[in-house]
Image (tube, rainbow over all chains, first blue to last red; front, side, top):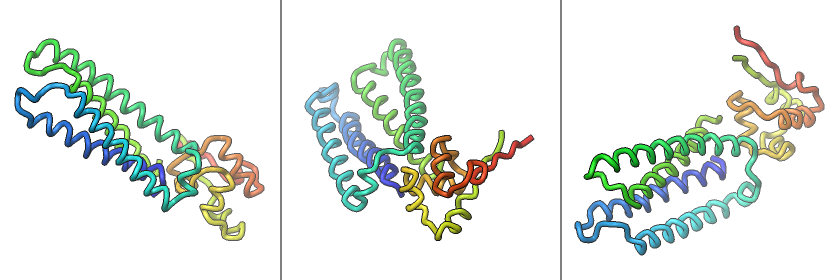
Length: 137
Length: 70
């Protein structure tokens, strides 16, 4: 497994795990605790950054040459394809959120909804990268 | 659609059993990319293809073959 693929795995697992906890706690919070909490989000982002740095450094220690090498043309192509898929998912999701958020009252169109869409798009980007690396493309 | 085949695996062994890693270092890509090219899963850029051909001292058509599927 290449360093870039390991990085994609780190990104996928850390985002799914850490934002998963954030959204789970939001979902299970009482009605008075619901809403957009800047402190909670700041803690989540800080945890994500720390976990990703630690895991990436850990992986780089075992493959220093590969970690220091710049991305090659295949890495760039895989990244571009993954970005295209994620952007399509992001724009479609935002359009749906705007539409349904405006017409169906129970679905609250707020910052957490947008954050969820952004995280989902990022997870899709990492997943798409991993699938392409696994296929060898 | 056409298919691009290559002789990289054979050429590596004819050049002192060169490893994928050694070839990768010479053409500035990762070993995984060389493997993907060898297996025909990834078509390299024209520049990378020329670099591979130069490593083996062959013209481009001596390394890569294009067959057009009807």
